[in-house]
Structures are given as structure tokens and as C-alpha cells.
Length: 404
Image (cartoon, rainbow, N blue to C red):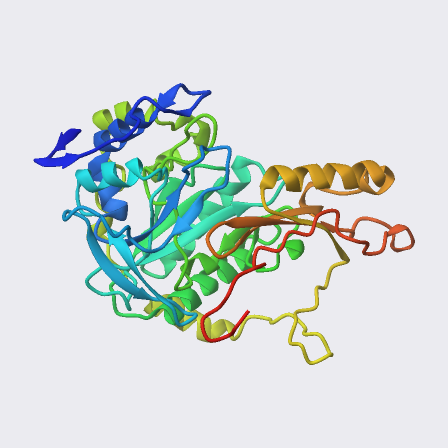
């Protein structure tokens, strides 16, 4: 039982090892968040959040819990969000260090808040830019694209605050006045992505369909859709080295690397330098410039649709699907099985031709494996065959009002 700011917070199984390679226990993770609480709350405090719980360890898939547990303590606020599908959920809102410790005790590693404050759920106050590198892309290319993003933001009266994603990419956060709805937010983000691609063709891509991006950095504008959340600043990520999503100064973007920032190293950095994002709430901007640019650019190109009336998108690339699996290791195994059976074809593929997508199911991720045959001579391209694994994440689900 910990006394955190006068609040009692129970940490169950404090000695349970969560990161075996780094030798970090559950209590170590709580103490990490307490050490960086000011910065972590600047990113996640006062916002409804999805609880991403790793109850079986970092080597197993997390499950996403939208609804706050019924027995939550009185220092955890709540807010009821209405989702695009017509459903709703009363989500947790943390406001202090005790709240951080409470979510960690539930098995949460990273914090996944919505870009709205609990007091105004319809008007986001944060635009989120996720620079997601395709396979084969190195960190320096991500840095180059980040600098172009900064240039576009500057040209439209906005201030960007960079942070490592805690994986391979980079996030850039932008505070905005809560005057626009999610439709305008996503349009502004998509417009920014298109402008970055225009200024850095080949380096950056605004193409939503993964197989069309090549070896580029995808400027992921869809992270600004209403139901999306992103790991916030100081979040611990489920990688063996206990890497952290670390705020950076712009002068650090080109010189630091994501692997430098871990649960072991970030508290000392925070104690010495403070939070590089300390001024973010004083740099509130407007979407007017990006929305005006959206009108100049016109509507984004839409993909062709199937002529059978289904409305399904038709890919412009020669894709075959290999497998659908419940967990990523199974997806990787299926890919290796396919490569072994098609060694000659596999040798022609470029890194970005192998597409392993984490797809959101009802409460957890599932994985789809596809191969883009664009670099394989047409006469040598294998036809679509039976899937090596065919997991159905919706099997047995019953939807209210729709039957089985």
C-alpha cells in the first residue's frame, strides 16, 4: 500500500517481474511513473483513456478496456464517450500521480488518452502526427520527414512538440483551441500529411493504403479519427528494453535515438532537464490555416471500388493474403512457412513488400499477413491460395440488435 499525495494506492504483486530482460518489476514501473508524473500527466491527465492491459505479460497481446472498472477509487474521474459506431463507454480519467499508479496496477504499461478533455468531449484540443516508418526505412529518414512536418506547421501558425513513439517512429503533438470537431481535425491532419508528401516526395507518404507507400515514412493522419488513441508522453512501451515514449526538444531530434530512452534512463533525464514539453499548453494554435489549405488542395484521391456493388476497395497493387492470426508470433511463423515454400519469389521482395498489419478486433489486436508482388515479374506471380491460418476475431460475437 503506497501513500501517494495523501491517497492510498494498493499495488498487488509488487515483485512480479514485468520486463525480464531489463529486470523490472511491477513496483519499478509504478515508481517510474511517480518520478515523471508531472510530464506524464501533462500528456494524459484530465483526458478519458482506454485501458490497455497486459495482464499476461509483455510477450502476450494486451486487451483494450474502454469501460472503467466498477470498483474504481473515488480519485479516478470518469467521462462517457459516444463512439462513431453508436456505442458508448464510461472511461477512466486520471488527474494525479495516484491515478497513474492505479492504472499501472491494472496491468497498463502505456497511457492511451483521447485528444479531448473530460470537460469537452466533442472538441479535441490536440492534433497528433504519427510518423510511421515502413520496413527498410532508417531513423535519419524519419528525422528528415519530421523537419518537413515542422516546416509545414510553422507555415500554418502551429507549434509541434516531438517525442519518440517508444517503438520505431516519432510523434509530433500540436495543441489547438477546442473549437473544431473530429471531422475538421482529421481533415486538417490529412491535409498536413498531403502537404508533407508534396514537399518530400519519396521520403514521406500520405497514402492510407499500406501497399502503396513503398519505403517511405507514413504520416498517419487517421490517428486523429474520433475513436483513436495514441500512447502519450512518458508511456512505457511493451518492448524487452522497457523503452519509453520520450518528449524531445527539436535540437535533439537529429541526435538522439529511441533506444536511449527507457524506464532506467528517463527519470534521471527528467530530474536533470525537466519536461521538454513543459510549454505545450501555452502554445495553442488554430486549424484555420490547414483547413484553408485543404480547400486549395481539393479532395484527396479515393481508391477505386469493386464493380460488383459491394463497395469494397480495389487495390492498385498485386497483393496476395497469406494468413490471419490471433497473435503476432503466429503471423511471423506463417510468413516464414510461405517464404520457405516460395523461396524464389521471396528473394525478389523488398522490405516494404511484406505487410504484417495489427488489426483492431473487439477488444484486442489480430494480425493479417499479405505480400505485395509488385517486384515479381507478372508471369512468376503466384495466385491467391488458401490461407495458412484463418483466424476470425468476430467468431461467436453477438451484436445488439443484429442477432448472431
